[in-house]
Structures are given as structure tokens and as C-alpha cells.
Length: 375
Length: 174
Image (spheres, each protein chain N blue to C red):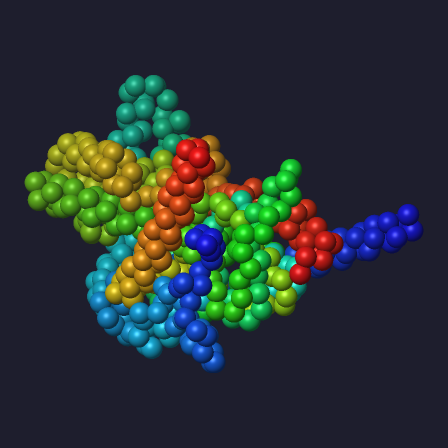
């Protein structure tokens, strides 16, 4: 009995120290987080890039190139592409946003407000309500575009200081196996296979999910750009920077359900501000283009490229997008769903491992084995 | 006759002195590989140390890969809650087990327990699949050798079965 009490005491002591260490770790993370936030963001971006670029690197490696050379070639290709597109797109975006901000405060928007006021007065006999609505809309528009401009300017300055991201990405791709092996070598034998299997499954599914999302965003971006380009051809260019607007729609598509609306709004706004002669028809065609792109995405692209293991209920999607928005604004909204997807995959794989692996000593092998002294 | 599933002395060549590289060369699924290719394999295997009586794999757990004994020895045990445990084989240095798990995640058909302090190399399916993707030529060599081992084992099992059948028939007909 004394022995039992001693065992219980030592078990309790162990549990206490474990809980204490966990609390200490959480407190440490919370204390350190503000100081390492920027580094953490750089690492997350590098990690995402390493996941996106790995298939290309593997492809070049399978053709007989050394891994380091394969990574270098892929990175040079991607960097050239990025520099070329950013040097074309970023100044354009800043110019558009600035001109839009000034247009919003200029006569066009005033004319538009007057039209809305007249419409409300005619139909609802309430000019006060109309004035309130237009004032609110104007305010939201200016604020939104102002923050968008600041965002892209900060992205621009960020771009200048991100030489470190390709550097980290290079080593993450090159040495990921070595890191994984070093990590797994510290795991006790009892949890070794479980950890290795779970780690691999998480790596695989998260990789597939992120690559699928990126591919989906790219295809939706290309389809939207093509649609807007056709509208521009037919209606004599009512949507400036259609390439950027189309690609933005692709990126916005990362947010399920809300993304397509977020993607269509800039195109509609630009068309309204451009005020072409047949505005109604142009707006209708923009809506049709985005609806067609969504139908193609939902019926063909998404089922083919996006992993099914990360299906989420619409309520969860909307909730995490709101939470993401509250934590980190537009970027938070964009990454909320992928981040939740990663958490979902990770937790489901851990649960799978705990269900399928025998973690306690087997009554037949280890305990009875040593008791029977079979060796 | 040796157990065709667990006994692998027919595949094992005489152990040479040396490091993991030399040991891997003795394992049939790696025996056709060139030195450069063996170095690639060496980079992705996991080396583990097991204490006496410590389980390497548990019967019923999802299969993940194969193990090669560098030093020490391992007992392969079939567990049954009612009948207890039955030793299927005792494996020593240079022997390997669990190779079928390189092909799928089927539950382990037996447990493996270290009889003494042992040094064991693990070669696992995720790393093997990754190797197939990155170095297809090397991966296919390993895959082909694995198919040869499995085929040989199947042939042995068939021989064993027909022998048992013959003995049964003889006993039945007097």
C-alpha cells in the first residue's frame, strides 16, 4: 500500500510539473510573441513558399539535377516572374488607388450621390435617408481605399526588405528532411512511428491543401482576367487594370463564400467610376462573368485541385473569416480559412494516430515479456 | 523449413564489417544499388536505439516501414489475448522485418521486441514515396527489389502450403 501511495505521489508530482511547464511555456510564448512577431511572419511566408515551390523542385530533381541547383533554378524563375509582374503591377495599383480616392471625393461621386438621392426621393419620398446612405457609402469607400493604398505602400516597402525570405525558403526546401529527421530523432521509441506517420500525413495533406488553394486562386484569377478582358474588348475598355482586378478576384477566392463577392466589387466599382455610356449592361456583364467563373470553379476546378479533407461548414468559414479580420484585418480574413484548414488537418491526424496506435505498454509484449524473463 | 514470412536468412548475405552503408548493401532491397545511390538511402533512414524488452513495433498498429538490425537481436511475436504470445522468429544483426509495410498501411501482423539492447535502422514508406518522386530511377530499383523479395516469399509460402497439403492427403489416404 505504501508503495502504491509512493507511486501515486510520484505520478501526481510528474503531472504537476508537466502542467507547470505547459503554463510556463504558454506564458513565455505570450511574452516573447510581440518581439518575434515579424520574424514569425517571415518564417510563415517562407514556409508557405517552400510548400508551393517543392513540387517544382522535386520535378527538376527527378530530371537529374542536384537539389540545391533545382531550388536555385526554381527560385530564379519565380523571382524573375515576380519582379517583372510587380514592377508592372504595383505602380499601377498605387496610381489606381490614388486616382480612385480622388475620384471618390470629386464630382463623379457627387453626381452619383445626387442620382441616388433623387432615386430615393422619387420612390420612397425620403431625401434624408438617401443623404445618410450616400454619406455612409462615400465614407466607407474613402476609408477602404485609403487603407488599401497604405497596405500596398507597406507591401512595397516590405518587398524591399524581404531578401531574407528567399534565403530562408531555400534552406527550408533544401534541408526540410534533415530538420524533420533531427526533430523525430528526439521522440521516444514508443511514440516514434506514431509521430513519424502523423507528421508525414499532416505534411502531405497541408501541402496538398495549400498547393490546391494556390492553384485554384491562380485559375480563378486567369478566368476572371480573361472575362474582364473580353468585356473591355467589347465595350471599349470600361475596366482599367483588369489584369490586377482579375488576379485580385483569384486571391479573394481563398475566402470561400465571401471571396467571389469581394472579387467582383472592385470591378463593379471601377466600372461605375469610369461611367461608360452603357453602364447598366457593363455592370450586368461583369456580374455574369463572375457568376460563370464561380460556376466553373465550383463544378470543375475546385473538385479537381482542392483537397477534400479540409471541407468546412459555411458557418465555420464565416466565423473564422470574421475572427481573422478582427485579428489581422484584410490579411487575417484572407488567411483565416487556410489557417483553420491546417488546424483541422493537424487535429484530425493526431486523433487518427491516437486511435490507431497502441501507446501504452502492451500487456503481452513489454510487461509480461520482461516479467517472464523471456530473453 | 524456415518461416517464409519472418525468416529472411535466404536474403541475407554474410555480414561485412563497417558502417550503415555496408549494412544496407547486405539488405536485398538495397543490394543492387550503386554506392552513390546507397548514400541517398543512408540520408533518409532513421537510426534508433532500443533497450532490452522494448517494443519496436506493435501487432495491430498501422504499418509504416521496415527495420534492419544493425546490432543486437529482436524477437517477432504473435500476440493473442487468450492464447498468450507465440514467438515466430528471432532475428539478429543484418536481418530485416516489416518490409511489407513499405507497400501499404495494413496493420502489423506481429509485434517485434528487442531481446537485448539493440541498434536498429528504420526505412519508412513516406521517405520511400518521397524518394520515388525525387529520384525515380533509384526508387524503382528499390521497388523492383522489394517486389522480388515479396515474390520469393510468396513462392516459399506456396511450397510450404503444397507440402502441408501433401502431408494432409497422405495422412488421409493412410
